Image (cartoon, rainbow, N blue to C red; front, side):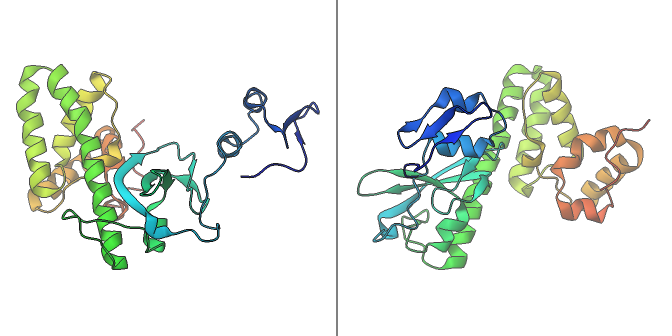
Length: 248
């Protein structure tokens, strides 16, 4: 990030960072600093995109993705704020790693991306498709972790329903709405943390669509539980944007 030529003062006039460095304790006393500013001051960005002579071909996507729901990280290539999905790239020469957004991996085509057979992916559209698929696989794993906890800690007669739901997910790439309601209610009863948006709702057959339509018509409380699992297209299809509040 470079050294500061002038100091910056807090509201009481005390210098909290200067050419000589940063006082972390002082920064954290002042909540009026945005979180991303504090992060930058304490952890100077390892931005490399503007450095002369940088060889992007020395960097490769490691396959590691991290979910950051707080969106308080910055892409270390382009400085874009609010990263939700952190993709890790690594320098093959010095093992340095950077946290970046997938768009930068696509944009800087010299950054190496390997397919499952360890072949380099060159085509831009194929690189995007590969990274999107890697994220979907990661989200799938995140969705299964709470279900494993439910399987172990829940009542034994839950296990058949859980297995049935997971088998349906693997076959159809989504859950039936009644399956999700069962899973969500049981996880909430056991205080198991889960992210609803990681559980897609399957509407590929008449039975699944009818099941959701019954919930929309007769069980608005259940619809509130399912709302964040529905895609924007699904919400639009059933005009659900204003129907997610509990009944009075």
